[in-house]
Length: 288
Image (cartoon, rainbow, N blue to C red):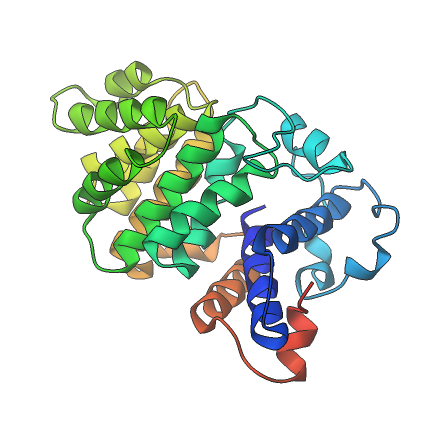
């Protein structure tokens, strides 16, 4: 879903550049419906025209990835979830863990808002989407030159502008405090939660990124060695440390073993480009 978030952002950008106007969250929702199609749920009635573009040309994506029930039920609904009109009361971590592309693409203030909008498509609890916006902000701040510590401090202030920010801010404060302590990671992480819900997943990832701010490998290993939702906390931690340290910090054997590596790198390169005029770009990222 991270890849399809990125695809949705790029297709929204294509629409905005070519048509002059775009509702980004609607375009990203259509991208999530394409993801749903890859999970063997068929095409949505009346929307046959949306099933095209680069990612649907990758046959390896058509494999079950153990999709979460919240994402499935929200996307199978005929309604679009928004912050104003919630579909559910879920604050599972699914919104957070797919939101790095928003931080890579948008400037930090906009990244926060877009991160919330895109997460609310499936996770309508205020903490579910606020934590997602905070994560997108952290990534954007790092890309703009902040250290991990500075990005977390910045987003902690930014959070105070939003109603119902308290759970997310408290979780971040706990992560910062834990990162300064002497407890080993295997003892500190359980004190932050298990990572199944949004603010706990963000807290664990921020703790690991702060504790191992100069070592991608150790940070990610710490983030996946607990009894909770370790794949989610590992993904979020990897996003933060990757943004801060760059590709060269990732062990070569890890890079070489990544499934769909070429697809991931292509999408990442296109996020950096943002937009290109021409038929080839429209073929990959049509504006709908």
